[in-house]
Amino acid sequence: MARVRRILLALATAVSASALTLWSPIIGVAPASAACTGSVGPGIAPPSSVPSGLPGFHAHWYGQSGYPTLCPGEKSTATVAYYNSGSLGWVSNKMGEMAFLGTWEPSPGQDKVSLFGGDGTNGSPATGWPRYNRAAAQPAAYVGPGQVSWFQFQIQAPQAAGIYAFYIRPLIEGAQWMEDFGVYWQIIVKTSDDPPAISVAPTDSATLAVNTTRSYTATITNLSGCVDLAFVDANTYPGDGTFRSAGNGIADLSSDAVITSSNGVALNPPLGTPYLSCVAIPADGKITFTIRSGTANTHVRPLVFYDEPDNNHFSLDATNRPTDKPFGVGGATRFVQ
Image (tube, rainbow, N blue to C red; front, top):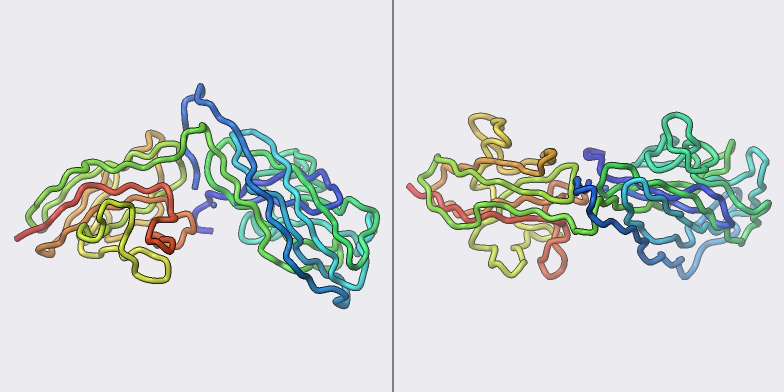
């Protein structure tokens, strides 16, 4: 995954169900005295119908606990249910017949160690998992065809704030991986109860000659990891929180201006770039950048945003309001001959 800013999960205290933990930004450092309170979102209901009696070992996702928001070092329990949709039962303590939840793609990866839990080996936290890459084992001695098993495990938030994702997939140890339903938890690690924010200054409008530069500073609070820098046409940003859509749920970004430097580092000299992906957020939360345009009558505003899906687009909802948050927009600059 291009930007590692996701993953979190819950403790592997296997109950009669399968539990998981998830990713994705990274929240920045707040004063040690700042209040921080964790929470868990609403659970996700099971599907209305599931297949059954499929030959061999099979598992169908059957609901899970909600996504947690945690403070650094805080623990939480994740729960996930799997319906035995196969023709064979799952038998505890029997190799080749016992069901587990394994770490999976894309984060942390198949059989990879997780930041959020483990058995204390291979660099994993000691949160009670059966192994460093097995979040939970079936809690019941036997789970027959048509029965539901609830897996439960514990996760511990890392010290680095951010938005993480943790993926799991059920398997019969020593036999096969079962169905991949893309099960994950999005876990937000925060350092204070204040929401993350991005502001871009100056906010006033300016008129410059073409091929001259203007400097802006993005101030990023309660967020870490990286942000993207881009432009919107100043004429299409009315100030009511909407952006012009390019279709398919993304904003129409401008390529009429370029970013020429970021925190003193020249970008693609002498050309610059109209879009800068994943600029690391410094410890002080400030990114100073310069912009330029060689095209007369270019009228743009710089946009700095947290690209949550990591798709190099500024995503919008059906009302053309951003779903990539937080974001900040600087003052307009018009370039003239």
